[in-house]
Length: 310
Image (cartoon, rainbow, N blue to C red):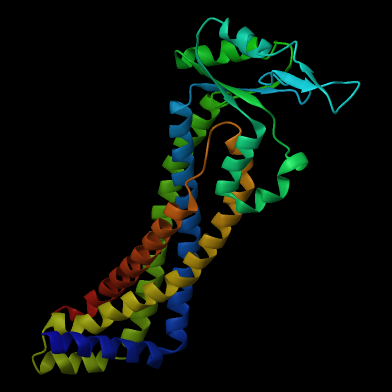
């Protein structure tokens, strides 16, 4: 049995080479389909992750103006920068936030610490260290219930010294609706694309089988079982799917890294994030390979059915 298995593998590889352009056509069909399916899956997975983050996010980011030093007891003298003087507004914003009803916890987040956290995700942001840091000091405000987020955020935005207020629930309803829409129609479109790929591969492999119909008939006449005849074509379809998954996997890895670096700074300010590349990339590559092998082998099995009927 093991000997037959390796024999079938060798025969399937020979068939790929023998069929030439038909193999290229089948691989191309898988490739195009998997690129589209991979994009749909990437969007669906990340939108679901963002929706989950927003559901859990009951925090408000209160960004202060650049000239506000709420956490510094002493600040440079306006007349002589070399001297330090007591800060008359020390913890002024913090205390005003604390007095707002519904606030549960206040955590200070310095602009330098925010940059360090961002550099962990995107190392290229080391360029912004020091005076080039574009971020702002902020207070991360935790509220008692999600329903308090919007009214408290509006109240905090009115405080003197506050430059901007950001919270994950600003577009929550819109994002939840978009997430449900993408989950439903994106999944449907991905399934439709997979069915189209199976149909294309089925017909492509069927053409190659038709040229070997006489060989199959002779094998049946001498008593070869259907399983023995089917195995080389099944493996051939699996090889087609595997080869067709290589380029889509590489393309998706590159596109995701670009998208992650582009969207992370914006999402970071709202305590949101895309799926980290370290976990997402191996996952999407695995999905692409498995899908490629499945649609290739399944397409081959479907194309063999009519030739193995008694």
